[in-house]
Length: 416
Ligand code: 4AD
Ligand code: MG
Image (tube, rainbow, N blue to C red; front, side, top):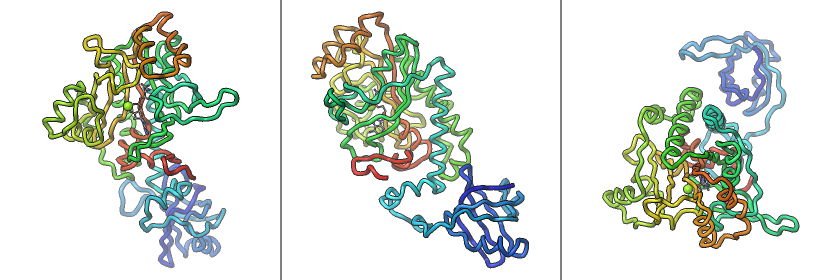
């Protein structure tokens, strides 16, 4: 067989060269024996540097010691290009160096594995929704309004319009679309001028928003739970090799598939936090430490639902049992994953929603179309947004979500 690819690593004894090859789909060890190949092929083997591009011919054989591992007994090597001194070597490199060389770092085995998992997560999300009656709806990136509060908007100059913004979430547009198609999801880049420099924040990240007509608060959580389980199950089936490369113990992922996710109201969560020694006050947002405390002994992600209205966006539906609360949920992942999903039932009452838009000081004229949805056949409806990078980071077991996106954008990083 023939492999076209790159040299990942090389060891040579002088009589045998072990060439670790990668072709994009995976890694394989090639073995070139000096006495069994032509002088030219041996010379080529010797000339190869890390990341040189090449094509190799040989026959596949079982690894003499490792079960289930195959090698390539090399008969021919054609050099495409001899790489110059490659900056990323086997020695440890600091994160800044690696991020500066992200265009090359992507070729490293773990980074390769992460991008493969990311692709499987994306595929699983599409499959989950297509299997359950949602259709893909593309929402705009350039928008004149805010979805998630004005403080994290990225502004851009737009011809005669002046300042408009990069989308924080496609949700509002998706709400319009599902009044046509019933159930829809979008999937695309979203932008937040987040001042947060944490392991869980990017300024450009990918979000999947889903929205469904006639679905209320509790059913929406059922959908979120089923989706997360489907994603995890798909990754366990399709990413075994990648999870081994990432040294990710699959047991916690496997375990949650058969268990119901915990659902705590915000009020219950605050009580629980107090019993665990936190001094958080009712009405405050949960910090990283609080999320950690709430999930530390949990085998399953935890929904925190029905939050105080005062700390949540304008579009969330008021709880009919308590007008100070909204019918929303945040899904907090296990193993330090943090908030993976934010969702809610949407306010479907015209007057209440109009008053909320005004109270938040949002520019009313930009939300007229959104209010229209409450004028013409308003229905109860709910939706949620899943952060792709946080999901992939959790499944891969990586520390910082900047590794889960090919070219991360952070407050202090926009290159390469
Ligand atoms: O909770 P958020 O802000 O919810 C919304 O934007 C809703 N409009 C979604 C909806 O209901 N359709 O964001 C949703 C998810 C978060 O739970 C988190 O996983 C991720 O998006 N996220 C981020 N991921 C990386 N970097 C950031 N700066 C993020 N901000 C949110
Ligand atoms: Mg949120």
